[in-house]
Every structure is written in C-alpha cells, then in structure tokens.
Image (cartoon, rainbow, N blue to C red; front, top):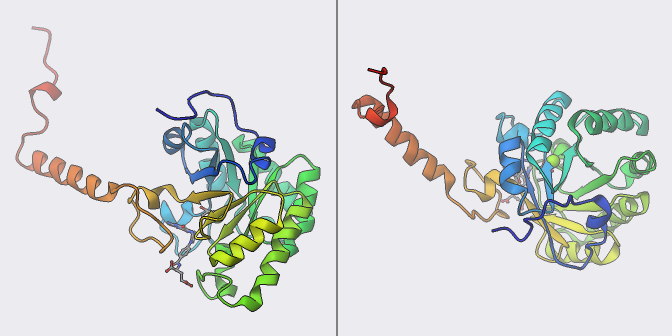
Length: 272
Ligand SMILES: Nc1nc(=O)c2c([nH]1)NC[C@@H]1CN(c3ccc(C(=O)N[C@@H](CCC(=O)O)C(=O)O)cc3)CN21
Ligand SMILES: CC(C)C(=O)C(=O)O
Ligand SMILES: [Mg+2]
C-alpha cells in the first residue's frame, strides 16, 4: 500500500513549500502505464527528454523533437491521478527567446495537460523563466550537468569537482529561483556544491547524482528498475527487471518451439 493512496492532486504550491520538509519523491514516466505505476508513490512524475535515449535509442537528448514530448506527455498525464506531471522542453524549442519558449511551453501545457514544464539553464534562462511564470506556466529549472549542453560540456560530466566553478552554479540557482522557478533539479554535481545551492535558495532542490543533501530525489524509472542497459554511477537498481524479462521471453520462445504454448487453457473450442 502506498502512503499516498488518496487521489488529492499534488499542486505546484504544495511542492514549493516542501523545502527542508519530508523529501520530495520524483521519478520519470514516459507513458500512461508507467505513470500509473509511479503515481501512488511519487509527488512528481517527470516526462523527461531522457525518453529519447531510453525508449528511442538516440545517442543524447539533443535530437528529441517536440512532437515526441507532446505524445509521451499526453500519455503520462492520462496515467496519473494525483502526482504533479512535469514535461521537459526539448532542445531547440525554447532557448532562442522568452517568446519562443512561451509558444513551446503553452503548446506543451495545452496539448498534454501537464501541470508544469522543466527547462535546462541558469542565469541565461532567468528572463525566460520569469516570462513563463508570469504567464501562468509553472517552471522547474535544471542546472549543473545539463544533458542538452553535452556538446559544450564535452560529455555527461559531473560538475563542481573544481571549486572555482562553484560560484557560477550557485549564481545559476539563485537566478532561476529569483526568476520564479518553483523548484530546481540539481544534476551531476559534487555534494558540497549541492549543499551550498540547497542552502542558498528558498525553493526545493531535486537531486540526481547530486548527493542526499537535496530536498528531494529523482531517477530515471528504467534505471532504478534495473531495466536499462547502462546506468550512471549515481543510480541504485532497486529491481532487476532486465533479468526478469529475459527469463520470461526465453520461456515463451522455448514454449512456442516445443509446442507447449498455447496449451488447452489458452485455446478456444467450439460450442459442441
Ligand atoms: N537512462 C538514463 N538515465 C539518466 O539519468 C539520464 C539519461 N538516461 N539520459 C539523459 C541524462 C544523461 N544523464 C547522464 C548520463 C551519463 C552520465 C555518466 O556517465 N556520468 C559519469 C560521470 C563521469 C564524471 O564523473 O564526470 C558516471 O560515471 O556516472 C551521467 C548522467 C542523466 N540522464
Ligand atoms: C534526469 C531528469 C532530471 C531529466 O531531465 C530527464 O529525465 O530528462
Ligand atoms: Mg531532461
């Protein structure tokens, strides 16, 4: 049984006030079925652009089109009863201007029914975050290791190993909080930097590879289920579904080959 069996929807203001309280529980879910698994247990369901890599086999999130996010976002919303569903804005659909970001985010809100959007970037996205929040679109920010910037970062690199970079990341966090983001994802950073940021802002920080000091945690569902082929060091596999799936498919293939499936119970007979 879940601790969240009531169906009262989780709102953006309810997330915002969870700073320093009971840790926020977030997971990704890319479609209705996965959302229905996660919904009873989580505060936040993220339809992350990681779906391009995890489901569609892309080498990074850079190639994820808006249409992909719209289709998966609408599906996940249909599977969620109470958790706050947040959809990632994909690369190339919001960076050019606050106006471009508004048009993209408004489509995402209207066509998926999600409760908020997430976008990557700190100081340079502050004006955009302010425009969206003023226009009725709640924004979760995402700083530190920002996968859409993999080509400028030189790969998926943990941030803040060099103390000289800390002030820049703290400034990013303060800028997005000041601009009106209701929460911020801290991805791939050393613990003391995550602590500094979490102490420096009044909005909850949600960590992924960013230590236990954050106000909440998020993982990619397929990673924590032990379903995905590779996982970063920060993942804990709480399940071993890849192995379970292989056992089941092996048994099916064998049963078909030796004609033990379908059996009598799985076969239709006429009335007489
Ligand atoms: N399945 C999956 N899980 C994720 O968490 C995830 C995605 N896909 N796709 C989008 C981004 C990309 N992410 C990644 C991908 C790789 C590393 C990685 O290999 N990290 C190295 C760190 C190396 C260093 O310390 O600089 C590691 O060993 O963990 C980290 C985050 C997180 N996101
Ligand atoms: C890993 C989370 C934070 C994300 O942005 C994604 O799944 O795309
Ligand atoms: Mg993402």
